[in-house]
Image (tube, rainbow, N blue to C red; front, side, top):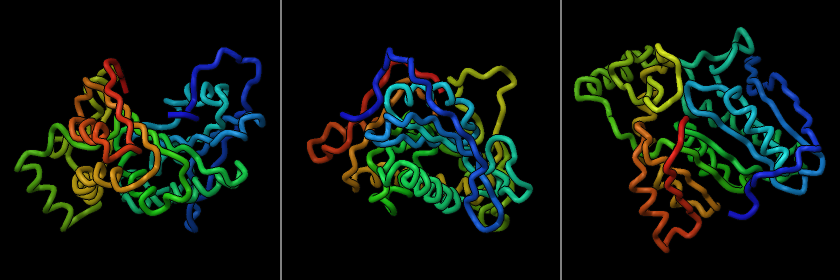
Length: 270
């Protein structure tokens, strides 16, 4: 896809690195936002990165610097409830819902466009961030230049057991803010086995309401990508133990969806 970052051997110009607590609502909630910019890069569209659930922006700082040196001003922020607490009134991860994440992305995207002379950003996301971005671009496609999905969660290989699904149904109706026990839905509460993490492997908390929301929306994410017309690159690691990419690879090879490009990757680690 033309216009996306490529490797650069010229490291003479170092990007200006800035960070701030960015306000996203009227409840004094702020999210950590970080940028790597070079004035000469403003002729290109900026990059806006959205990390996976259970991560934070520190994992991608070195990548962001490389993107900036390759000619693309790069921005990344911590999803609500991720990273170090920014404010006492910050919504904890177990209470965040999809519509809240989408509203946060709208505020960040509008600010990036303002900073970059109203250029639409290329949005790059990882894992379950694909669900957030797919919902966002369906509502605000005019604010996005193009999309890049890295190991997106489009179809779960391991769904909850019958007992787990039954308990999730009850919890989501009776107490949607209840933290989901890890055994109910391991695919959404545990990092993938391929992740380079020192034992014991950490788990991240997610509430019953958001879990049911994701289980409902993940299968609908691929159809959403086919409905748009934005140039979309999808990177599909063949050893991913969370997601199945058979459907998106088949659709991307269809002449009907010329805006989709899916690449199967032989080696990858989250």
